[in-house]
Length: 236
Ligand code: UDP
Image (cartoon, rainbow, N blue to C red; front, side, top):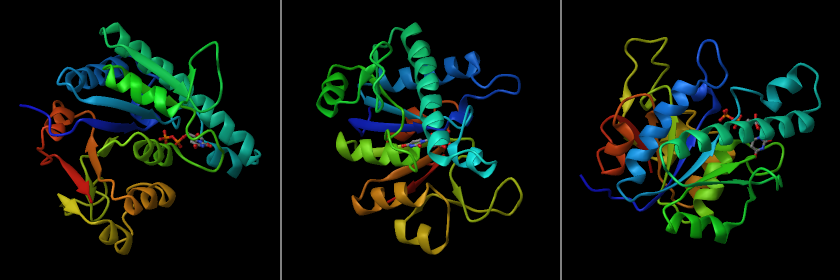
């Protein structure tokens, strides 16, 4: 199998890292790193955007009385913790990585510099974008859409706990039907929540395809990048 994509962005929610007794499960980090390694080994240039929802979300905190902006900065710092965990997991498998943060943390990682990020990718390093966009009131989905456009990625892959987009919640309804492919406009008219509206619009306006898949399903990432999207939903 050979890949049909050269450069992609993989967006992982912080929640994907969580286990029952740990907000960052070392076993899950390992599992994710192995899946990422399998596509890096095929020669695909991989940039990662990791969320922070397993640790902190500004919006949820603001609903309980915290200042939204402060909470969002805390959320962005949470993504940095996850980024370091992933960096550790990937490097333990021998994959060179660079964490680039949208908020300067010079002792810990590089600042986000687009041209440098592209150079790292060209050299086969995995770039992990941390601290979201660096601005409150945004999300890491928006970060993925923004960075994907900036670095000319061909695809935004959204790894979740569900294997695609359904017409209704597959956890609640047995008769939920999965879409193999759906247009941006159908997602909007059917009010399907693929990403938050800012992120979704950024992809739609720039014709950047989104692939939603279940990260825990073995081999799925590799299949998608080789053009087999059976086990996912493509939005384009
Ligand atoms: N965040 C932010 N600006 C950004 C990205 C993230 O303020 O550009 C904050 C926001 O509080 C968010 C938190 O970081 O709730 C964690 O990100 P997100 O909710 O996107 O993580 P995920 O749900 O993907 O784990």
